[in-house]
View 1 (cartoon, helix red, strand yellow):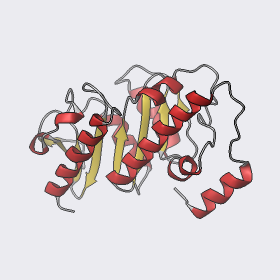
View 2 (tube, helix red, strand yellow; view 1 turned 90 degrees about the vertical axis):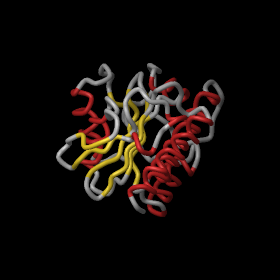
View 3 (tube, rainbow, N blue to C red; view 1 turned 120 degrees about the vertical axis):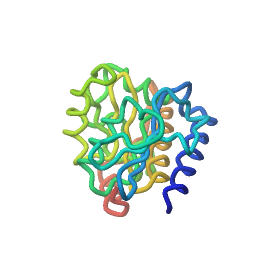
Length: 210
């Protein structure tokens, strides 16, 4: 895929997520690894109206090369790339149900969402909770980095998910699955629920490694 095609894909998928209510206002950001660095959504920009020409281009050394100023949460993306050599894209959203779950007091910080569906296990896997830090705090990058080697998706407390994928389509798909699972989790609260067993989860992880 050429750089121009990648720019168009970022805008297309960003607009799709915005129109489906997965992101709103100027929240959330996307990045994609390219041969000479990264393309990122600019700071303060709605995903519903991204301009391919104005996307931020970042060099391999972290220098802002062209386009508008990159997202102020660029460090979250960089640490995922640093720790995950196979990551080709990163999506960070403030999606409603995922954020709601991230605010709950009684969730398991080692794995926030139980194995409700096979597709959550296949696309997201184990989802650790990252303790709360203010937006832009570099300690947040450190905390994400400690988990990123073993997890391609994390949930920031009182903030939202950060998800890496081999491609942007993979990262978006996993983010959508995470949000849908968070919605199901909230809907099932207080109900007797049949989760997948440890054996079923292990079988899925063997069949569909993330």
